[in-house]
Image (cartoon, rainbow, N blue to C red; front, top):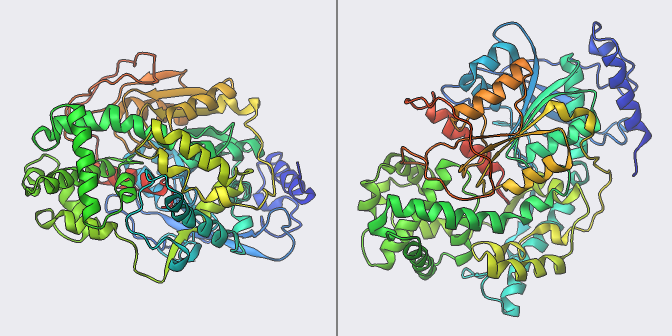
Length: 571
């Protein structure tokens, strides 16, 4: 392990602050001039959601490289705050995941949907290094010339010919080379961001930093607690990676967890919502989905792009969007107008909103041709890829080779055809050549009693098995499973009273539940839960279900969509 001595000095500085909590954070020795800065709170660059509580923002100067903080090269990180409306209990940092998700708008949204937290906590957001400033400066990107990518618009990873495989590998190779060539890439890592978080804690004058992280944010929160165990307060790790293992394993699990969701949850739901359009049985729906896939290919939408629509459906909006495209494809294959069925559905208002947002037409004017055109290749000279996403995912730990990922494609494809053929041929980390600069430690036993993991059973973005493996590898953690839930991000924004109650009580009263199971909530357009056998084995606790929908449904749906989107590969 290459632990730089300067980082040790930083940790010692933090420890000195902890031993003198009555004094301001700036009283500690600071040889590099970072803890002496003042947070100048002012207006935020982003436009908040209409129902959100107003936030204020500030810029924090951080060293470009915490391993050499005195070299004079710095970056700026944007942070936000919604101060506690009552007696201040502490600061709670919220991260939406990614890697590379901007989080400064989250405190205002969380304050609105969880007013009890707003009363006691200063809610803190952060746009991690490399992500720019939400509503202001753009995130770091990697530019890939289109001539480095495949010109084919009919790519289908099921085609195992040498030519098809070579065409598929052009994109991950070009993305890896472009992102690695960015000067900032070596410094866009979890290790660096965790040190930024520790500086933010010091500037806030807090003895500990409490935390809620979603998806990749669970990895970030766990590594912060591992690097700074005395600084970590209560941690809620929601929709979790296996933070005791490999970050890349979460992405490698996409084929099996998405196939499971598609076959066991999504297709049965489609037969209940649109039996006349897609079929009344799962077998009929699966066959019609294939017919829709073939039909969209005739319109110039590659089969790969069609498949991808039905992976990572971790939010209600992504779920409904997939349903609409499914019905359009089957109707188009039958030579019928499928929009009438969509307009008559209970999902029509959401579908109309999605159609206007994604396809620039109202639902009444949505056609398969409009969808296919949107799925077509970008006509620009360059394609932009998120630098932070790949710098973190590929730079935190040693990566596996292109040959290993190609074998993974061969293994996963027959079992999980929805995404198994494609994933192993599309992973940029397979071409990542730079070695990690720092080692990330595992979560130590001393912080286990401060950690609560929350996980949906059929989450298609961080699989249930990832969270369970982390909990088993770190004895003393508590796991709240959410039975039958197919969505990504459970706490606060999914409207589940069992989850919200357990997590909020833990954060406010330090009363952590034991390992337990919460019941799920109905799927879109439904009023009851349809149980599905899955990896959750323990029965759900009985909770009082409210007849009315959780408050602020529009705000919650918007944040759920954001969390799902920023944790989708290549977002």
